[in-house]
Length: 401
Image (cartoon, rainbow, N blue to C red):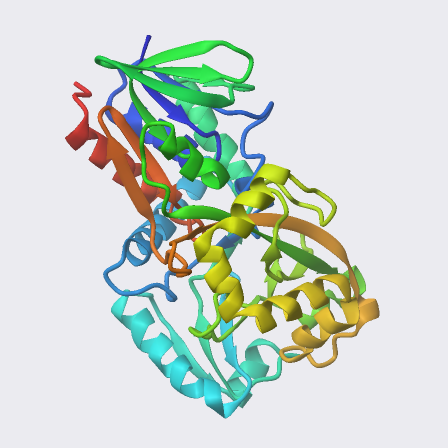
């Protein structure tokens, strides 16, 4: 029997496994991952950005843990000799109606403690990004890029070296609390027993919580984001991250430009309902996943409120010319022929029954069990800080000594 079993071999589960053994090296710890390899889902389909923390509500867990996590990941990458780059980010206003929101975002960034933010005019934008159109922008020099898959595997190596058992092909299908232990039943019929359990299930976080009597809400609704890739000969169009000014009236951020560690430039993503929790392709359909999403009261309310936006996103998903038109708002020179089909990711979007999107990290627990219910972007940036938070909470809830 294990002292602690952590369910989920993505970046959050691995960070928590690592942190737990750093503090309590004598514990017998297992990490259970349903796939044959680690970091196969949200972590492995990540855009690769190290976020600054500017977007998030001051005082929220996202704001606190993103800023802390960014600094921790810099130090970690340097110690492990994992290459990362501080390429910076422009948050660009293209019309006067966005200026008030841009100024509010600047205030939020300062309140969150983001270092060396600069407000740029049109000339300043051109100096940073010669091909970018905008009337004003915030420049965040501490935004960077990294390969989060490499970071995750480094966490796994640390945990393994400290004695963790990483159990691949262990999909948890049921959890039974019996006295002072929890029995985890897996897809192949095997069982794992542990005194305490922490779940970091990402796309399946709500289902894992419900296995131990957790609330239905927040519900995970999967949204697929499809990227385009800039042709290599057109990479000169983009130097660093270029992002839109977020519009609070819409549920998603909008298309942006993301340089990658391999030199490629990703364009997007859009945001459309995925027909499966692992629906990385338009053709991938899971009847249970889709049925749960379409009948969930929160999604019905969200769709009713934002149906025009949703239809526009779907149209752009199917029509590259329309997709590129949205990108041309920031890089007018960009043409459809400059773009190649790119990868896709699925965001585990936590939603309440009233149709609101959960805007912060969410943690909850029952007797002997702790669940990470919501840890989307900036989850990777925040991963080391989230790992600390999880273990802090576990030390209060569980008798780890």
